[in-house]
Length: 237
Image 1 (cartoon, rainbow, N blue to C red):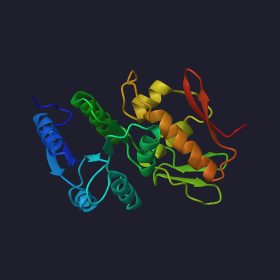
Image 2 (image 1 turned 135 degrees about the horizontal axis):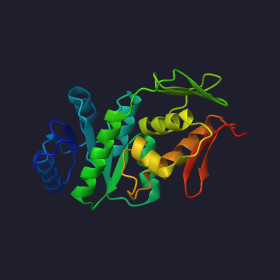
Image 3 (image 1 turned 90 degrees about the horizontal axis):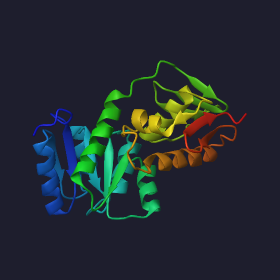
């Protein structure tokens, strides 16, 4: 049955497990998506640049070029195509690595197609609904946020390299600086999840942002965890 949210959406699936690739191809086509498939990492970056899919579903372990390297290369080229990584690896470090390279989400095999579909819809909803912010410039301590150019900088001009999702989170929190933002709000309005979704993606993204702030010398800016509620971005005062 055609799914209105996926009708005419273009999906590129890269997976070397032919049975899984065939199943995912048929699954997304049955929901109305336009699907293209690839069986190795060779030429994926170029394919994404040429075809501009709405979302990329990408296995981590691939011949020629692994999923991490593909995402890293895309982001360095400023290609922000929403990407979900598929991985057999279950360790937290592997998942954090994928998010660090710029992936929007990950799925650990084996997974249900129902959950994958929900993740895809969430990311598509987020990428379609996040609007340009009204403020041209947000300043908090040494941190400067430029919503229109999607840049985060130290006040001395040093650029802070954030992934698409990390920037969306920082910008959302900066617009509400010093206010506590509920975990459910961030999951729903920024990450595109339903508030009752069980996922550690938000925690991982916040951890990555904190590390990058420390590396950039933003000693007077921090993201505080408000136990049982959510997070707030403060200037440390």
